[in-house]
Length: 78
Image 1 (cartoon, rainbow, N blue to C red):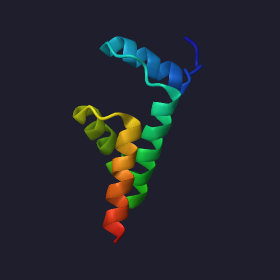
Image 2 (image 1 turned 120 degrees about the vertical axis):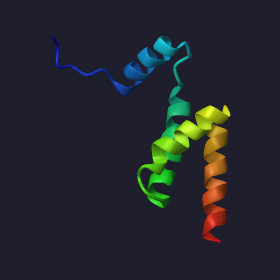
Image 3 (image 1 turned 135 degrees about the vertical axis):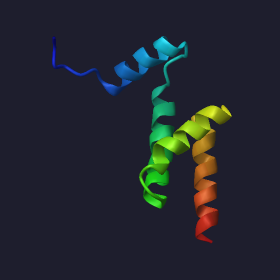
């Protein structure tokens, strides 16, 4: 058994194939990571994966979702 771990892209591509989805693009991954970062730094860290789950359930494009999260966070600061 090898101790080599797959890259994040490899792991996500494998999971996508397992559940019948296309793998996320590098741009989608970047948007989701930025979204998760905002959620984690604006609240408790557990908000990050839950926010990403909410985006997926809503069927929102990750780039659009990032914009919505930024808008929400900016409005919250007002």
